[in-house]
Length: 291
Image (tube, rainbow, N blue to C red; front, side, top):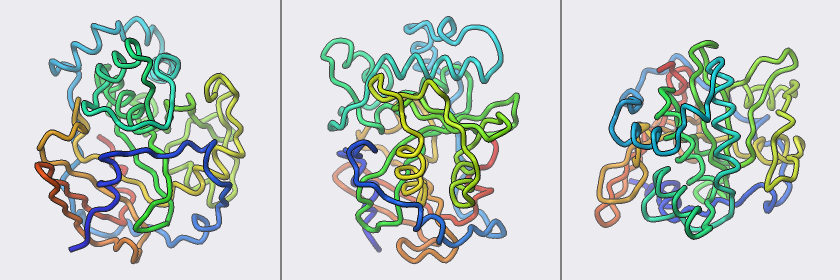
């Protein structure tokens, strides 16, 4: 059985920021095969840590997240949390911390000024959202390059009860996206719109180290390349990505009839004490199922 190369990379993940990657095009994404939503579910259901779990309660109280989120709609509150965390811990292409949770990542930056790669930022943002009662996930995005992904990016998806849908958020650049009518977009919708050359509006507050993010570079060149393969941890929980001997499970969404890697496949890997399983699916409806 093949090695689970994508996840071994994550153990020492140093996914390169879009500003440091070569310019790419949407060609591979636009030529990709479609998904097949008639396929049966071949992986366990996604799970989401409840906000009243002790570590999430402690995180919420320690950083006064209720005050930061403020009043208003669920969308307003999530956007405030995103902007707050984006400014709190900046992005740098560095090695992961051994303990990958929001509290350790925030404290490490506050005490040692050790920033985080997109993986650590997305993990922290995910736990912040979970602590506030929102179902959310870390989403690892790769190109069609296989087995070496040649860079990549990690973002978040969060379910908005008021909209009855997932939305795209990126703590690295404080990004969320809308269509031409002002509707917030999900990751799936962003991908589809890139393929079909449909309008995508980036929030004007998007920035990288206080430099405004350029839509063409971020979407057309970078995310357009890296929305080919998407991988989510199966269990969205506090401290779930720390490598400490536990079993780690992921689900990867691939185009139907994908060969490299195969769209019907379960990758497994045992490295030391770490056991990793990655289920594959080409059913986008199941992958993006509502919580």
